[in-house]
Image 1 (spheres, one colour):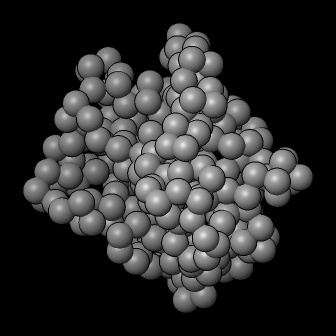
Image 2 (cartoon, one colour):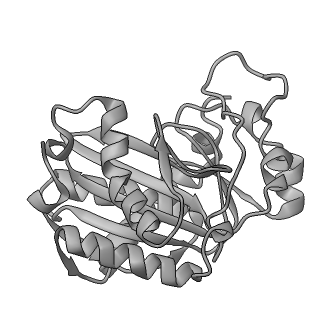
Length: 256
């Protein structure tokens, strides 16, 4: 079975960006790895705004209470990967992405690949005293509920795996913003599941930045990692893709 140590990784430090640019950057980085222009890459995201991020196969009208999203100042966005809607906020969410050749998960079932690509996080959090575990297919959990969730996209023999962890969150936001348990407006599309949220900050006195530092250090113990700043050319391509695709209503509401 493959391990993270089988590849040499590039770490991209935090860059604070709007939601649509962050999501476009996901696609750009994945394509660069697929073309051999970038080595396997690992990064933590920094959100510059509050956002509701739908999975690729979700119907906006089914999932989001748009009136509440407007009142609370949440940008609406859609990612290229599947799964349910996630709530992200600056300084309150921990989000990371992995972009690698799919040989890293060769021979694994879809469910097994999720657990494998998040195993290092569970191990690190447990070492920090957090009672973390994993619930198939894609939930990072504590004894009190869901701390985070993962999603994947695969193309051109390359895998994108990203995970969003609620470091601090008002749990009431879930029912206010996401139409869980409400009648579906459209019959198609993947619905978000009803799960109790258990923010990471309940379980540790470490700050969000300290947790990210510990996670980065842990990943670096498991594999060869070289740090490189995100280059301006890649960022420019991502901004252009955001303007042409991810920030357009045609994409955000593409399954209306």
